Length: 336
Ligand code: 5GP
Ligand code: MN
Image 1 (cartoon, rainbow, N blue to C red):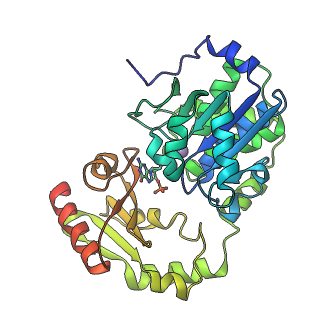
Image 2 (cartoon, rainbow, N blue to C red; image 1 turned 120 degrees about the vertical axis):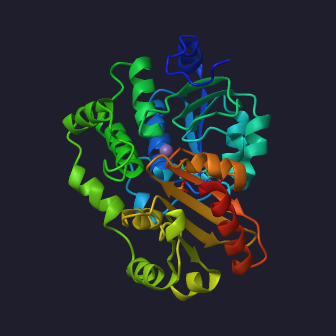
C-alpha cells in the first residue's frame, strides 16, 4: 500500500462531519510546525465539533505562545490523565507533523491503543503505518502546508485569519523564513493566500525569530567560540551542549532553536550536528546540504529520522567523551 498520498480520502467527509470528539496530537518537543499544524486544525474543527482538544507529549517553547489556539494545548507532562483520556475517548485523532508513533514518546502506547479514526497529516518520508488515513506530501515545506491543502479540499471556505496565522507560522519556522525546503511555487502561492487574510507578517516573524532570551545569545557566542568542532576532512561540524553549560546559562527549552543551522553557513561544511546532553542520552539535531542524507544517517545510526536535510536522533553514552567518540566513528563511516 502506498502510504504517501495527498489525495483527499472521500470516505473521511462523513467521519469528520459526524465526529463529536476530536483529538489533535503532535510530536515530542513540539517545534513551530508541530504547534502551528495542530492549532490550524484546532481552529477549524473547534468551531464545528462539540469537543476538540490539542494534546502534546510535553510543553512547547515560549516563543510559540502567540500562535492562535496554542493556549488551549494540554501536555502529558503536566496533565497525564487528561491527555490520555482525551486520546482514548476521541472519535477522530489527527496526528500532525510526525510519521511514526514513536515520535510521541510516552504517548505512543495510548495512541496505538486508541480506537478513534487516526488521520496523519504530515510531510516526512516513510510513515510507519500506524494511522487509518494518510494525507502526506514530502514535497511540502511543512505539515502546516499539508494542513492547508487538506482543509481546503475538505471545505473550500475553511480559511480565516487565525488559521492563516497558524499556517504561516509553520511555513516560516520549517523553512527558516523561506531559506530552506521552499523552492516550489506552491509554498509561495499558499503564503500569498494567507497574507490576503490580513495577517501581520512582520509581527509573526518577530514573535518567532526575535524573542529570544539574553542567555540564549550569550550561550550561542560561547558555544560557537569555544565548543564548535570542525572536521574538515569530513566536511562536518558539531557542537555538544553539556549539562554543566545548560545550568550555567539557565538553559530553557527553545534556547538552542536554530543553532544547528549556523555551522552550515561555513564554506566547506556540509553536515552540522548539534548535541544536547540529556539525563539518559544525548539528543542530536542534524542538518546537511549538497546531497548528504542525514535522515538515512539518523535512521541507521542514531535511532531517529526526519528529512533528507534535517533529522534528529540520539546517542546513548555514559559521558560526553564516549558520546563524542561514538559520533566521530559514525561520521567517519557514513561520510567517507
Ligand atoms: P530537529 O533537529 O529540529 O529537532 O528535527 C529535525 C527533523 O527531524 C524534524 O523533521 C523532526 O521531526 C525530525 N526528528 C527529530 N528528532 C527525531 C527523532 O528522534 N526521530 C525521528 N524519527 N525524527 C526526528
Ligand atoms: Mn515539520
